[in-house]
Length: 102
Image (cartoon, rainbow, N blue to C red; front, side, top):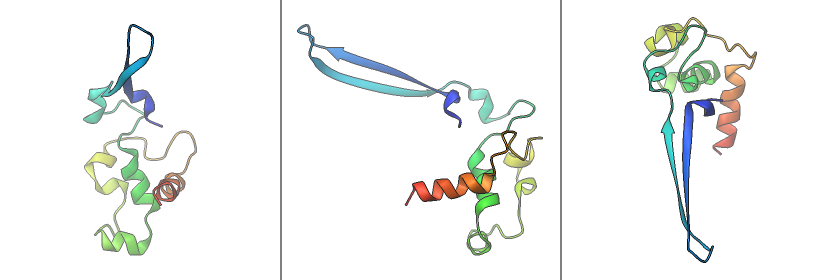
């Protein structure tokens, strides 16, 4: 879960009578440096790891990814942490993502 990398500023406007008049939510990235370089033992863009582990043979072929893995792409290969440290499998999180998007 990457939610710790993002912040939200919530502004709520009230009328002087106390009634809610409006609200706005701004989401912002807290750690811009992580977009270009991650710290040792971390990895970025989890979805790429999940795609490469979770796609089936047919889907990989359709996307031109057959025979390729995380070591074949600069964005995923630059991490020394290919497998998650929390023992969650990328293919499982990919399945959960696909299920959520139905």
